[in-house]
Image 1: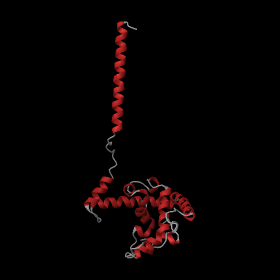
Image 2 (image 1 turned 90 degrees about the vertical axis):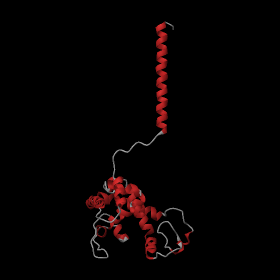
Image 3 (image 1 turned 180 degrees about the vertical axis):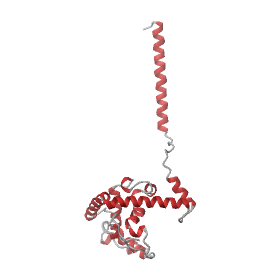
Image 4 (image 1 turned 45 degrees about the vertical axis):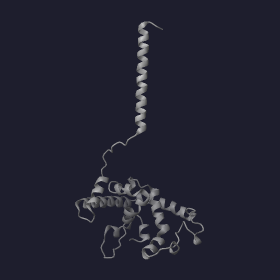
Length: 218
């Protein structure tokens, strides 16, 4: 798992070796881990699972504020995440470290939202994400990340990497971007029926007046 400071470096290339010395994409670019794993927490797991294999991040469902908020969540709770990872037997919330922007000592201010410092940090992260997306290294990162996701999808379908046939089938079904079958809409049917009835009434009314005119009755 990458370090928080490396993730906050954004899309720039960060060369760090893994535990076995292997230079995987997730080691070379900690932001790969963030985009692949954390963004789904704010963009929606199912939606991001599909779009990260089809679109660049800047053109996907992930907005600047989504990306900045995901980073803020990490900054806010990183010490708590680390403690839980290092102490899997932890059973009481009282043992956990406080979050940076949403909790105070004594927990008497819990559930009162983000502190002013947290809001300011969010605004700074938004500005950082905008600049990061527009940079040359940011654009190249998104090209590489999309290629990585597409390659992973192909390897999964081919059964080269771990994962069951059901997983591959689910991803194949998710990638079906053809026009969906229209869902049943009772209100639409009711409107069509009303419109049809009105048309019949108008035709009947015209027919009556036509016959009346033919008989010479005013």
